[in-house]
Length: 306
Ligand code: ADP
Image 1: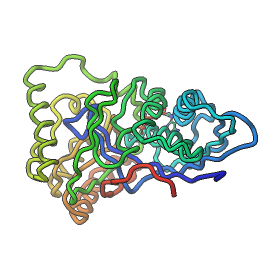
Image 2: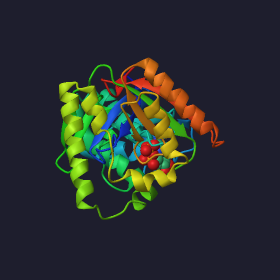
Image 3: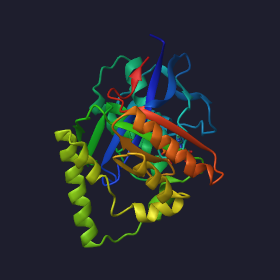
C-alpha cells in the first residue's frame, strides 16, 4: 500500500453545559486527506486545497501531530500529506482537530502499525495544541472515535464514550466570521459564581443521565450553559435570536459550537432539524453575513479510511 485516502470528520465541542469536556462527531462535513509513501525521506505536507493554511510541519496541526507520532514510532519511509480542507478553519466545528486526527490515523494505517485509536490520541492532541494554545480533546476524541465523548481528564487521557440516542440530529449554522480559539478563551471570565457552578454541574449530570436513559426531555432540560455562553455570545451577531429561533422550531437545545462562531442545535428528527435550519436562516439573512448551514446525524465511526 503506497497511498491511502482518509475521511476525517468535523465535531461539536462543549455541548452547552460540557465546556471543554464533551464533544460529538458529525457525519456531514469531513476533510479528505491523502497520506502517501514517498522516495524522499522525512515528512512533508505536499498539498493543501480548499484553504490557505501553513504548509510547514511546525505550523500546521496535521504536521505537528504527524511529527509527534513519528518521533515515537520512527520510520525510514518518506511520508507526504495532502489535505483537502472542507471544514473551514476557525469555524468552531473542529477543523484543526480533523486535520490532526486524520494525519495520525492515516500514517498509522499507511505504515500498517495497527496501533489502537486510544494510542493515537496523545499525538493528535499535540497537534491541536498549536491551534488552541492548550491541550484539548473535546474535538479530537469525537473525531477519532466517533459518537459522543466525555473527557474526564485530558492529562491521563481518561476518555469515556457515551451512548448516542438514535434520534439525535444536529443542525449547524456557520456565520462566516472568524473567531480565533485562543482569543475566544481570553474573552472568558476567570471567576465562576458558586450558584452558576451548581447549576452547571446539575445540567451536565442531567445530560449524561439523559444520554444513558435515552430520555430526550431530560437531555433538553439539561442543555444549558450557565458559565461560558454569556461571554462568548458577544462574539456572535444575533446569537440569542438564533437560539430563540432554534428553540421555537422544536430544538431540544441550542448553543455555541466550540468557541464559535458556529451555533449548533440538537433535535429528534430530520424534519425538526430542517425547520431549525429555516429558523436560523431567517435570522442570519438580516445580518447580511455569509453563512453555511448543515444538518447531520451523529457519526458513530469517526475518522476512517475510504
Ligand atoms: P476550529 O475550532 O474550527 O478547529 P481553531 O481556531 O481551533 O478552529 O483552529 C484554526 C486555527 O488553526 C487557525 O489559526 C489555522 O490557521 C490553524 N491551523 C493550522 N493547521 C491547520 C489545519 N490543518 N486545519 C485547520 N486549521 C489549522
